[in-house]
Image 1 (spheres, rainbow, N blue to C red):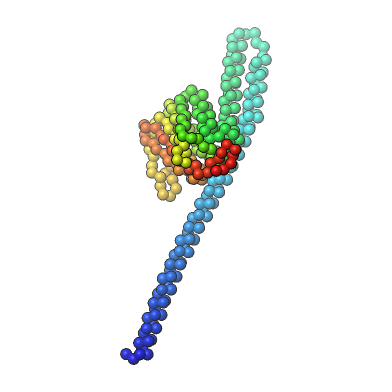
Image 2: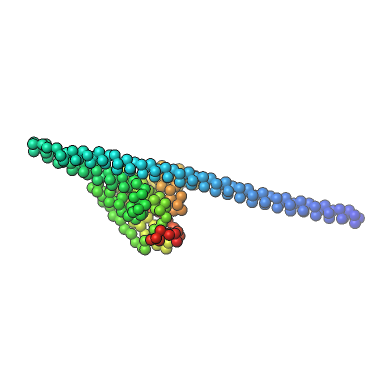
Length: 271
């Protein structure tokens, strides 16, 4: 083999190696770009879903606020007038008078219940009271019904979160409590809030009948009912961890873990 042929082979080999090198680099760059594209697409989808959920929550809160205002301004006033009319009605029959007094008491209770419900639904009241007082207030309302016992325990040094986060957390807790009343056939609800190592843990526990709980699927909690999925999505929106444990005959426990890396001081400033 002469020197010219050897040089051609060397050049050809170098060209093949360079081509292979550039091909490998091209494949690596392509894959990196594809991965970045998929990540950006997933982030865009997540952002869209979060924005959509945020909009839905804002609409729900405005609807609740409107209902609260309607109860306070219209239904409550009508019942107040009915109670006043009964109080000013002159009746000679002692039996009828006793019935009027009983009706007054029932209407008075209905007015108070409506006021309590109006406050529980109103976003402004919840923000004014704060998360902990709002949870306690909700438990007090349930206890007033006489159908269930409640308890509330707080441990650790309490901290306040952003108002929007506190409102979302309260709606999750409120939904959990209402689920207990509707479905659990429970005699007691226990709410616990623990502040520890810059994490707030909330546990809502009942002694009801429980239910079969299927594992969370990788495709987005499709095994859960709508109410539980809504609670999970709300928790995800504010960076909270949501879990629920339940067994037939052993009650249900709902857990929320919320990072406290962004808290609010007494003056309303973010830390």
